[in-house]
Image 1 (cartoon, each protein chain N blue to C red):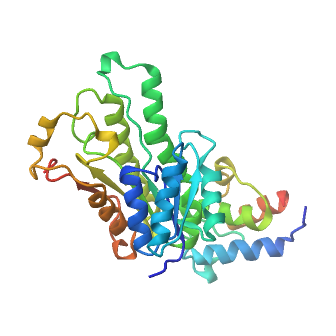
Image 2: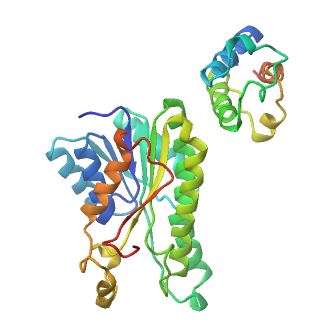
Length: 80
Length: 243
């Protein structure tokens, strides 16, 4: 399996959040997704993007555990 | 006019489904004509579309099979070289009887095909649509469901559920440029409606049955970019029966 760095993962997640309408300057590891106005549809699409880019399948239960941007990056990095 | 993306019509080999395939192709969509058993008729639909200058492919799949949805979408995309951005859930069956005489098999067959397949194909098709920021789900419902029709409790339940499902999907994905609408035909002249008593016609304000092409026209509109602000609606094509 290809190894992906946290930097690559962070970029994909950040770019995705921006494409969903989040402000780039508000995005950091500690930012809560709800504060970025990211909702369940955005998270469903983010899961798709992560699956396509990194081959990591996130279940609904996985996604429910994600609160911050850092949580998302760490979860994908752990499995990629 | 050519379109980005292609259309998949379930149950596209005959009746209303065949008319929808022809209509979408005439409007510029490459069309995957899904069929379960009538390969020859699906091929006739494809030939008619090609003769008119359109693009179409026949694709066999039994949509009541829970495993059929994703492979069917992938086959359509591969055969036409485009993502499926228009999904018309048209495949439907009847197994009529009074509620007190229905068998579990009749109930399951109708719900699995009319509702289950609609759900599974929609769920799978939405993945590409939300990424494309464009998609059209058109679910073929029926006037039976919102209205009662003795002897069709299973069919009515499935079609009423299709309308409820359509509305909920519509609000979930609206901001991605994806619409979901239902078309509810009334009494339409097809093989599936053969045997429906003539006196029913007397209840239709238009005093005539509709044609598959009239239903197809509604679907073509809802699939078009022009219908981008129409979502969660049910368009009745019933000669005034539901008015």
